Image (cartoon, rainbow, N blue to C red; front, side):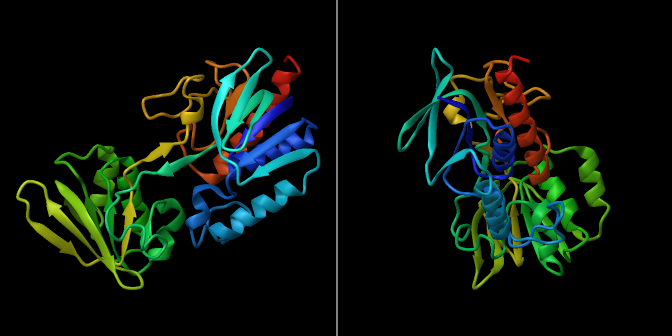
Length: 305
């Protein structure tokens, strides 16, 4: 029986693991891999303490820091599939076994919602990106397309304005869902070439890197091409919360609802941190801080506080 089982190898999970080890909790750490969503980023400029670090370097540093801790058992390359309630606490079922624990810290992150069109996978990290906060500076001097008319799409355009030469926003419907204030802000820039409404992305084209984007006007059926050197896909994310969906309360987006201590009021003993939660700001630094809070909250829970 473990004191806690931590699920997920991104900044939230590793931070939770380090603090759980420091509290001498009997801890099992389960992850398929280290690094989280930022592993695909070639240059992360906002990870505190590093002016610039690649996603791969970040993943390696997180892994090394966790493995330097004593009193923590790590199951790497193992996938947590389900958490169930037991008389003594919880059981975490994976693709390789089942483990009993008093508490669970869910840091399973989220996965980017993808277009699933030709060229998207081929040019991932070679012109196709999913995090403007992380990667906008990499597209200096390029013409860009942003796909998605929600807040994340509008904010991606705003992030690109200091760097790109021109920016197009493709929206699937005839209405922008993002905040009008952000739309007004980006429309004030001469770099923003406007919203292309009712645009269905068909293909991302290129050679070694992205050189264009094909889309269809959903009203006329006419197919058109944009000459761009980069594409930000900002159509949302899917939280990896399926493994606890029968235990904890989720919001309409499938995110785990937590309180300011990262506890799930709907399932005492289950804590969560990072992109799998309803935390408003999906950032590595915030995930790391919330991971610390989750470990300390689990420790206090075990102490009966």
